[in-house]
Image (cartoon, rainbow, N blue to C red; front, top):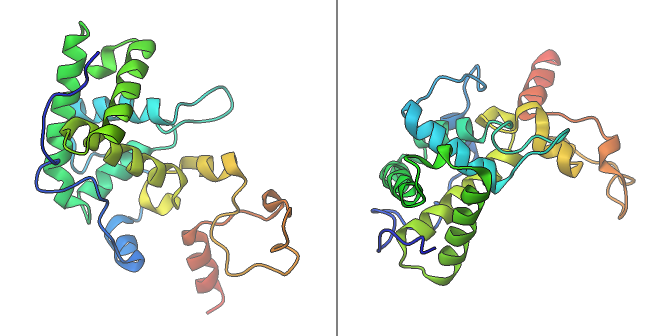
Length: 209
């Protein structure tokens, strides 16, 4: 199956994720209620398509949530409404072309395909994205994959990593003020350290003022 639909770089943006100052990113993307399901950029149809795509990039399994369950869609949606807004056109066009690939497979939308067919499309996009820097759809997939990883493993304040799913998967203790010498030793089991988010640290800081 040939996944290529469009040529040329993804709109005015390239597959390179822009360099963003962390403090700016935090201010731009966090909200008082980061886990709201209200869409800030995508329409419901686009959100359904993207959620089905990220679900195949980091799929879940019993007892281990994947990208969809961890709120990666919400992370990307909030980002595109904020400091990633230069990629809005890229996402809109990319999701349209993903739908075209789905129609070639006999269904109207990517989210309506069975899982094996979705996985074949994702594998094809992954290959083309690595092999052809001028293929729009392949480079769009690389952007989505990068954002999926960010949303799955980033701090929940940015909208993803619901219930600390990404951190629990790899045993990462999250945001910490510091580590003890013992905790810095090779082989230390970091899962023994209580997990904290950035919001937890700000809250604790406020409690001590």
